Image (cartoon, rainbow, N blue to C red; front, top):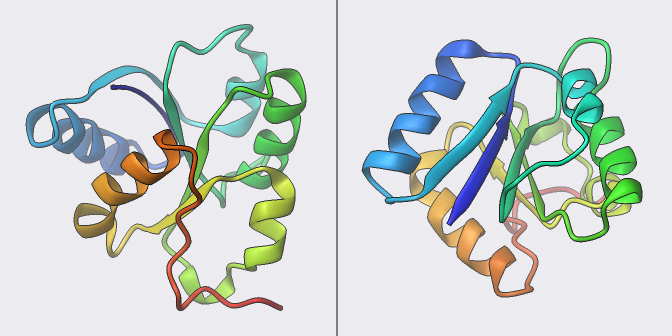
Length: 130
């Protein structure tokens, strides 16, 4: 499984990369620290993209909307520290296939990835529909 990381927190990206490669045996094919950089890439070689929602300049929501418009095959899972501020309708409208809280990432990420790769959506029950 090939994973691409988009998150402005360098330490979180490093920790997540270590977890994905050493505990889940996935391959991280690339990483970038912001949505703008993600959109500047012409091609991303990944089965799954993990996208932080809250980033400076171009948010994960905007980066996902534009990224999906460019490549409808992208399977993007939102990752955020702020679960209580997340709107399920907004995530699905942007094109996200799933959501994992940074607090629960080590517990839920593998399940989310497997669900999304299988063509399903993965959104925890406690995400609000505004």
